[in-house]
Image (cartoon, rainbow, N blue to C red):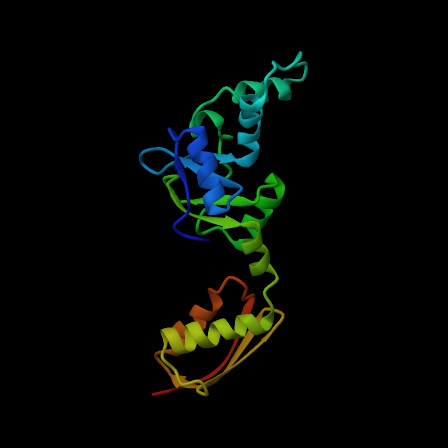
Length: 205
């Protein structure tokens, strides 16, 4: 996810919301209350009806369809809370990338607010973020393991451990401190795109 996420308070005016989306180059933003709880999402689509009514010099004709009537009623709103779509479709930090991608695809949303267990906004994840993660190739997984896990977390020399990745299955070989090996393997296993870890490490004291 991307954090911090751009959001707007519920009492933000229509024009302020429009300016925020334009300035941040966003198609939508979470709407939050005073405690940062996500109460909805306001998007360019939500703003279009309002903008059309403001620009029009004539009243709309008969509104027969329920969807059209609701859209016209929403266009009377003046703040993010009255213009937003609710309830918001959200995901949680502990959700897998696959589950978040399914939620985004099913709801046809480009951006999903990420909320904690109290429904407070902690970040946002986009369809592009999810897609990049899901299609990440083996070389990128290997690079993350070598840079973040081996060198960053465990301060190992570049040639201390040999890492190979094939189809999301990681094989690690080499000599490592016996006390370090279990945590090292577990750190690799917790990477989102790793399906399994084949442990060929030799423990030394």
